[in-house]
Length: 470
Ligand SMILES: *Cc1c(COP(=O)(O)O)cnc(C)c1O
Image (cartoon, rainbow, N blue to C red; front, side, top):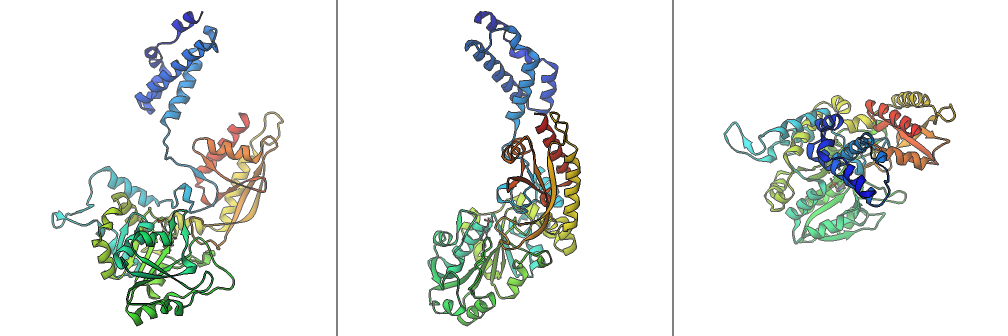
């Protein structure tokens, strides 16, 4: 009996000749398809041996092909792939932080596709430096004397501290010994870079005099850290950059500012209260350190702008090679910075700024459009709409450890269903392809459209439709 069934198992070569399998190989690598066919035949064999299959009619080629296509698509799935972010969190750390501008994406593709001038000077026909690439633009935009780009801002801080203060002391306020992103802790980074941390003041209050009282011959710098992902509110006081500048001048020591977010344009009209790079330089920071993929809206990078003697020491430090940025980073960064030559253009073309500055009225229109499409989905069992939807006002956040106390005025679509729980809806949205990520609030599914592209709306509606028929 089993033997007879085993003899009837399709031959791998025969399956591969099927028209649908041949078509599949036009979009999925042959090896992957063959692998899927082999696994499928093996699973049939196992089912026969386990007596889960007892008749030849249960081994129809047609249904086998369906399963092979699904299996091949599953095998072909990239681990790193696009998702639809319906959370409204503009800088979502788990979803890749800043979305790049079209120009940045184009430039990355151009540079990645072939050879490039990464470390080559075509004018002179000799070896060049990767540090030149975003240099002129960064200096033009920020007014800084010098700059440097490394792999990310944690590396940037580490390099700056090592270059400035190895085996010396650095003074930091106790209110600024923060942890950012789960793994970046200011005290740990200082210890790793060989700097001795001198904590001054208290968690909620630190005055300029607290710094001054601890300045010694061993003081290499005054370090200010922007508490970018939380705020101390209430009975508080911190020394301003201007006050630290005065101390720096008095004692001849540099003032380093780890700003984190890297905002280049004033976003206060949209309720974002965050320091701006150019202001920090004007107020007296000798060195400002920030991320490329937070409010700047570019690629993952760490950017240092400021005094040329400090930057020169950073460039010469052995760690500089360890934390260097790659060509795709420079390509994306240069294209991003180019938009900043015109603030209006930056607000329009850089997705992070564009999303933050989207007017509430526009968000409401998008919600209504999405609502209209979803309301047309019928539940075949009841003949009534499958989902109950409502558009309402709700405050959003920027996310990504930026502007924690700033609220973005938003409109969201709230969705429930009689047939499915919010958790089920959330799970089905997330497990489809591409994954659609939503929030659940008060037992309801929330679509915050701020972070959605126009083309995402159709994908969401289609998915919700499929979920009903499944
Ligand atoms: C985000 C942040 C960092 C770390 O930057 P990454 O680019 O994530 O490495 C360091 N310092 C501050 C103040 C930050 O906000």
